[in-house]
Amino acid sequence: MSGETAIGIHDLSIATTRYVLTHATLAAQIGSDVAKYERGIGQVSMSVAAPDEDIVTMAAAAAEPIVARHGADRIRTVVFATETAVDQAKAAGIHVHSLLGLPSATRVVELKQACYSGTAALQFGISLVHRDPAEQVLVIASDVSKYDLGSPGEATQGAAAVAMLVSADPALVRIEDPSGIFTADIMDFWRPNYRTTALVDGRESISAYLQAVEGTWKDYTERGGHDLDEFRAFCYHQPFTKMANKAHRHLLNYCGHEVDEAAVNRAIGHTTTYNAVIGNSYTASMYVALASLLDNADDLTDQAIGFLSYGSGAVAEFFAGTVVPGYRALLRSRSHREAISRRQDIDYARYREIHEHSFPVDGGDYPVPRETTGPFRLAGLSGHKRIYEPR
Ligand code: CAA
Image 1 (cartoon, rainbow, N blue to C red):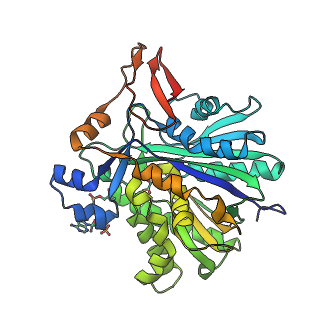
Image 2: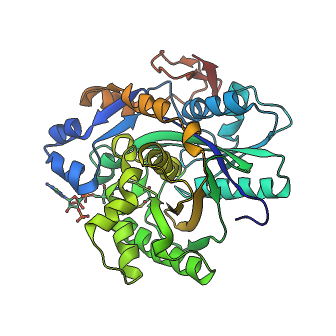
Image 3: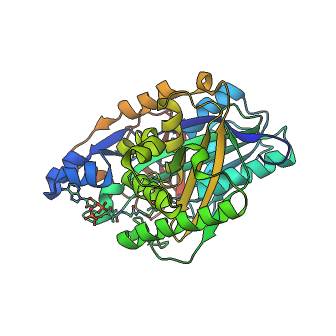
């Protein structure tokens, strides 16, 4: 635990998009075998953001029920983690702060390090609560994963946001010390400022991820962390759900354990349910895995969960959390399942149109048609400013 005070995730809420594209549709379009996606990478469908949705609207949709349940009186910090920032200067969290009517006595900041920064945000939040246990920190991870049409990465797109309230005496998961951390300068996935789609060396990225599994675990054990056998389940960053399988097999092997499929399924099974239909949500992905585990597994009270957060480039962190008694009464399982099931299926032509959509850059007025069914929308771009509104 962090010092004397138990600190961790007090509430957790996820949001995703208006639309969904199935891998069956994608496979039919590009003449590929759908089994390559459904079995090969473990993905069935991907969330697609409508033109009036983005990281801000998803983030606000995820955070709104948290603020409704707990109020905003104790929230003095909002940390927004994303790889798909909407501005080079202003933190996207300020739009969320405004949409949710949070107090002006709040600090808001955005963090970036590919898919890892959600965990940096969580650790930042824990440190602030450690300094003053009366405060709460709203941590948000929100991303729209986008690769070039026709590229191997296209099948691993997706979009989602996770909002977490970090607090002393948390109701869901206590986050513990130590963390095992790892950094190596690797160009496995990156996105230059002039591109809207990510660049990736697919094979290199998988081996970099596995190298990070070893690096973080080595540091974690050297710092006196739990033994592998003490964990009930593992939430891995899931760029595609098969990656969690590859990572856990690698960890078992690295630790000299027998690698059998039943043990792997027991460790990661329920963590992949949501990501298999949402796709990669970069910073949010590992926390979507946590939501999936808590919502779908049998009672996990007092069980240790291992977290492996990986961000290309590459930075990674392994840490443990323990599930708090009574957590099940506070889960948002129904609204999570509804957010996923109410997405509207789109055909390839519509997906392609959305994929190619971008705003002109001349500073004119560009309203966006109403499409989202979420509580907030991007109303348009005017004078180079993004305009958000409740729907
Ligand atoms: N039936 C069943 N399985 C099949 C199949 C079929 N008909 N055809 C292929 N497969 C299997 C392959 O054997 C392979 O499995 P293994 O890796 O276990 O061998 C799997 O399906 C994928 O096949 P390919 O390797 O041929 O697929 P690909 O070259 O088209 O691309 C990819 C796969 C490299 C993951 C690509 O989707 C990609 O570049 N994705 C983006 C990068 C990424 O997600 N990297 C992950 C680590 S980086 C990270 O985690 C950060 C992040 O979020 C980006």
